[in-house]
Image (cartoon, rainbow, N blue to C red; front, side, top):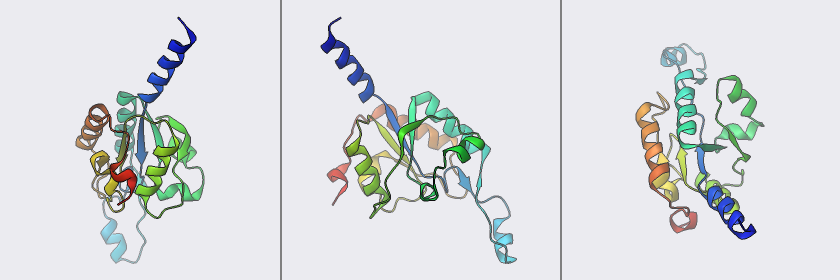
Length: 174
């Protein structure tokens, strides 16, 4: 096999890689039962990483051979990968594992990440759609109270398998 054909195969395989942009709060971490009572009693409720949501996320990544890129504000506090791994996350991270912090919106950060990398299909898991309008056709929005559920995983798989679109609408800008 000649060198050009080998390079084309490698490039082709690379372009088929999938990326999952992960917001953590509201997707993998959410308030446990009784959080309203804690709030009323003056205690600050804490979001907890939930095993079921993490297992669903691991399954999503395994079934789609996806790499993870953290878009969550958790990335602002350093490398969150060991913490997520300790909680049971086994999904592989992209070498450039998080979006930048340059704003002005999370959607802009995702757009810049996509423009800087040879990414294939992608999905955005985020409980809040604000600032993600350019990625609306790639957005799966779990409910912030319950996190990632089976129907969210099914929708993410559908997006990753069904939309070869690499460019966000309007290049990520209005």
